[in-house]
Image (tube, rainbow, N blue to C red):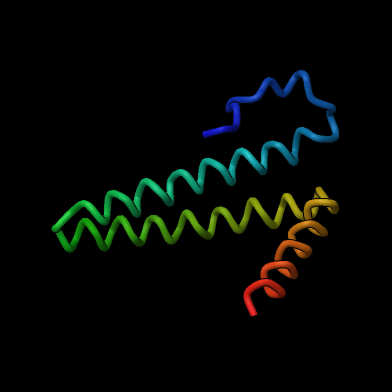
Length: 93
């Protein structure tokens, strides 16, 4: 992972801390999604696979919750996310 977690939030500007907390939450949830999906792919036990994939799906919801909070607090991130979507649409037509 390229990010440094936990960050030294004491070195950050106070107005940036909440956005960083949301980003850290997103990173943690995405790591969890990856872990659960990898574990599900490794097992032959259908009950375990089903449970792991269900938990991974819940973690994806958590990513969305942190993202929604981040976008409320970081308007530049909101604009750049929209720009990224636009670029993908243009380049994948």
